[in-house]
Length: 197
Ligand SMILES: Cc1cc2nc3c(=O)[nH]c(=O)nc-3n(C[C@H](O)[C@H](O)[C@H](O)COP(=O)(O)OP(=O)(O)OC[C@H]3O[C@@H](n4cnc5c(N)ncnc54)[C@H](O)[C@@H]3O)c2cc1C
Image 1 (cartoon, protein in one colour):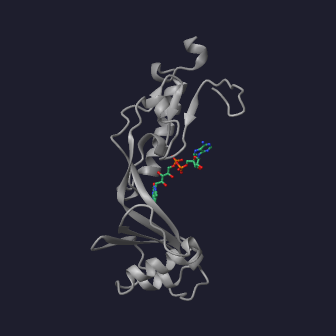
Image 2 (tube, helix red, strand yellow; image 1 turned 90 degrees about the horizontal axis):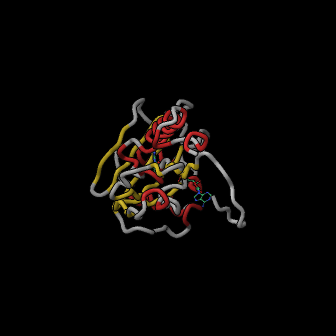
Image 3 (cartoon, helix red, strand yellow; image 1 turned 60 degrees about the vertical axis):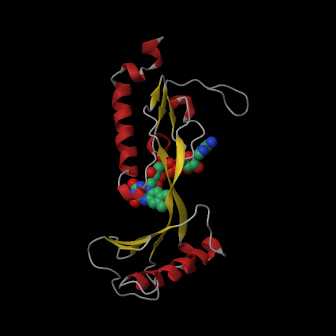
């Protein structure tokens, strides 16, 4: 492996886990699969425990509400706070004036004011500077392979998919345990250096 400072490092295995915009994926897949904008942006936040509204913010179960080109989800957390997410079909790269310093919070409020209870209450109980915004991307087509020699792709570098499929984080854990098992068993696809040379 070449290092940035011009040196080299030796390893039995290199795990390439540099995310959806991976700069190393092509070392495994050859041609670069396209990273595609999924057509929507997503905001996320968590209510603060001492926020303006201390009532239990949501019912016990997680819910997702659908509107025209927009979705809003609430997930109760064990400590009484609420995780929420909101999505909107929009052009990629958009940012509200003021960004994550309060601008994105205002943008979500603007879009979701008038939605049913407890949407507005959950937003009011969220610190305005605590709202994240990320465009959602996925890989298309799927790279087909995640292993080449001693190189292994992991996580979004291997199989970035939209979060509404409810799988990306779990897939990363599952793939990593599968890779470890194959490596330990000396599988032909992931053979340790000592076994192959
Ligand atoms: C809005 C949104 C909501 C989501 N919700 C969920 C959810 O509810 N459940 C779920 O399971 N998944 C969810 N996901 C997906 C989940 O976040 C990803 O699947 C997961 O983070 C992928 O992990 P990763 O380690 O592969 O990549 P990342 O988390 O992207 O980590 C890659 C890391 O590599 C680093 N890196 C990149 N290049 C270099 C380099 N050259 N040198 C050194 N470091 C580098 C980056 O800085 C980063 O820290 C969501 C994603 C989004 C965008």
